[in-house]
Each structure stands twice: as structure tokens, then as C-alpha cells.
Length: 77
Image 1 (tube, rainbow, N blue to C red):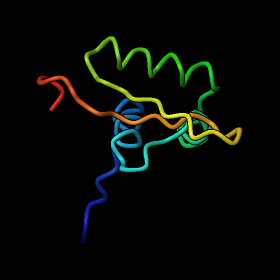
Image 2 (cartoon, rainbow, N blue to C red; image 1 turned 45 degrees about the horizontal axis):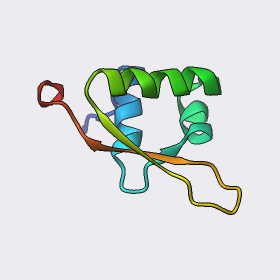
Image 3 (tube, rainbow, N blue to C red; image 1 turned 90 degrees about the vertical axis):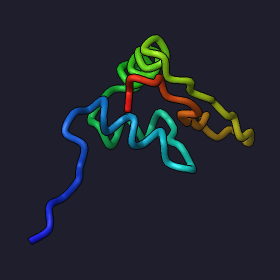
């Protein structure tokens, strides 16, 4: 029997989404976590205040910005 390693908290799930190579946009995060877009943006701000470095890339062509964690605080591991 194998145990699923799904993050337990929404913040842990958010960090997991943002550490993927492709990152995630607000719509994807909102859908996966069941949040409204303003809640998702507030959570990104909260991570920044907690010491995470988050990059935002605007791909152009009217597509949504993609967010990705580029550095984590030392005590976050």
C-alpha cells in the first residue's frame, strides 16, 4: 500500500504549484484551491511577506501572468 504525498494545507498546495517548472497563473491556482482570484493574489502577497521570492512573467498575446517561486526563505524547508 502506497501513501499519497498530497500537501495538507492550502498554503503547502500553493507552494507546490508555484515550485513547478512551468509555475501557475491566478486562474489555475484559484481553480485548484477553490479560491476566488483576489484571494489567490492575497496569498501570493502573503508568501512574499513570508520571505518567498516570486517572479511574475507576462507572456504577452493577452495571456495571464505566470507566477513561480524563485527562492524560499531558509526556515521554509
